[in-house]
Length: 114
Length: 115
Image 1 (cartoon, each protein chain N blue to C red):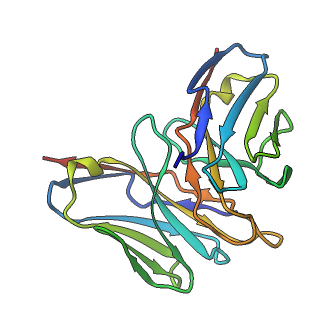
Image 2: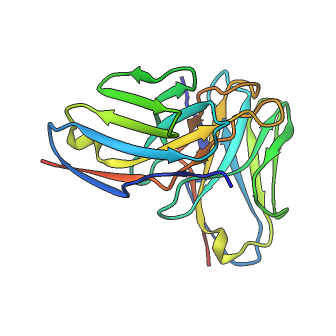
């Protein structure tokens, strides 16, 4: 049973560029959440997708956007990259968004902005 | 605002001892709590969870205790092993606007197991 998979694993971008990160949820899961984890910090909630719609959003600017596809996979897009966007980006999947259920995380994408 | 914090940023224990990692949360509306283990270069790994209608839950070598009165959560690891060395996060979740699985994480505790 494949768990949550993310691609790419590492990425280096230049300030001002745009980046797209991808996530495939655990088999059977339909909800995808994205988190940003700065070095030495806990993950911070970016947003959550269910039924191809953004259901809730954390305190992140509009430069951060996402999408969920009919197969439940998801993308995170970040425009106009800043040095401060350098972080580990984590995708978590769960079953349903109504009620608290166990969330499984992927290995993350390490984004470095130079 | 909402926050989940840890009392001890670093915990060093001897192999075979029991470990206790503590966490305080501030949102009294939180009703679901999870402990995650994160090894270097990896994503958080689910350890154990507990819902607010419970005070204690046990897994394999791990126990989570929830004290809603003082909004405190702890993770106990029995017979700590070198493989337990990692950063441990507590996370809380509450129902927002009907439903969500949004998790609020603390900053983490580094558990260092000495052989």
